[in-house]
Image (cartoon, rainbow, N blue to C red; front, side):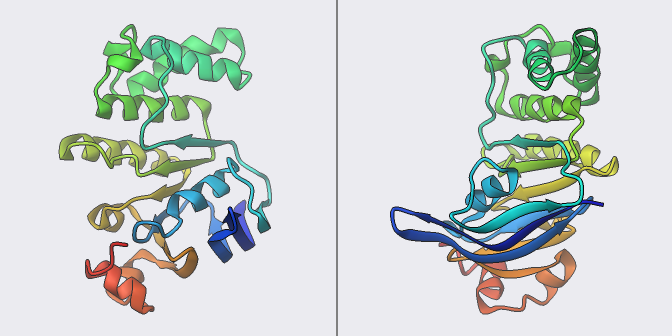
Length: 230
């Protein structure tokens, strides 16, 4: 089983330390929630985890075989194409054989209850539908790990629950989930383990039940009590 490892990872921008001395190991299959107040470095850590950014100090690497990766942003990127074509294009870029692209794309749309929207322009979908399409696009790529950056932050409660259910589909087939969220209720529902950041530093990495029941650091205690937001 592969694991994502951070060794003394730091990131500086214009002389300012945004992340410092992150030592972390994220094992396969578990749902890892990255939590912390505003400005803690959650999205930055997620982007380094995915490889979109390289650390300025330390290193990030896969221990064992590096799995196929996919990422879903808070505001998903939709091409000026149909719902179906958005997935087909992603499969083309990934090198999927031409005769497999449409069947795999249709199967992914069916999996996320979007097949009836296959011919519609992706950019006219609602926010919740666009996020489900982004997840369907990931599903079609058959990743081993999915990184999600606050995927429900701008959605209404019903759409957010639909996204949580979609995330659950990945988890049930063994896909590793690494996700940032500002929603403590969501983290309680979804997390197997919690990475808690404060001021660009790793404060805790612990099983979710333990984190919420007995936070080990004062910043984590204040955060879970709703006292620490920035």
